Length: 99
Length: 159
Image (cartoon, rainbow over all chains, first blue to last red; front, top):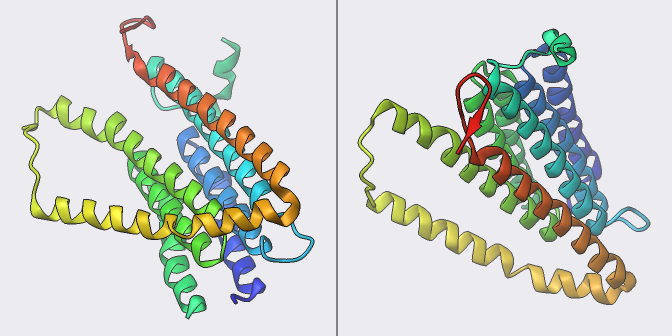
């Protein structure tokens, strides 16, 4: 049996890396990648809680992962469509959306 | 033993996460992200959640195929690199290893599924599977539609 605190530590490190990347990186694709890194930590927490009594199980984790993949796919498609007409999408230039 | 195995997968996953978040080239970041998701899937297997692990493994392999097909292969084509496929022994060995790993991991699924269905959460499991299938199917259609067209000139997309 793996101690829960060690799984939570790994999940927290995932979240920290993803959060720091989201705050420091400016290209939109990098921010999306960092968001997926952070959200992968939540999956670890779900998996750690799957065996615990009263915790959310694998079914909830399946739905969460499907939502995560869908959000990442939609975000990637939007960034790709922007990138097709303009060059790399940078979040500091978000006022382009008003044009 | 499981704890050692967990950290064997966790440390490279964290390094891959750092690489994905910090590398300046987005393609390298995407590749590192796929590696991280694959290692996380192995961690989920070690944690005793094979359903989640298998789904994440499928997602990471699909992502790797999309990155290869959509980015790397197109770049090689644009560079005019020779495209003759070479089926080397290493590739065949790698394919065999992936098949063996997939077979070994999916062998854990029926017992887990039976436990979930007989454990009183059968309805939730079916509903969760349907919801996950609908979401993944709809985003697969979205990806096909978004990446099918090539960029035209002056903002017009063409086939």
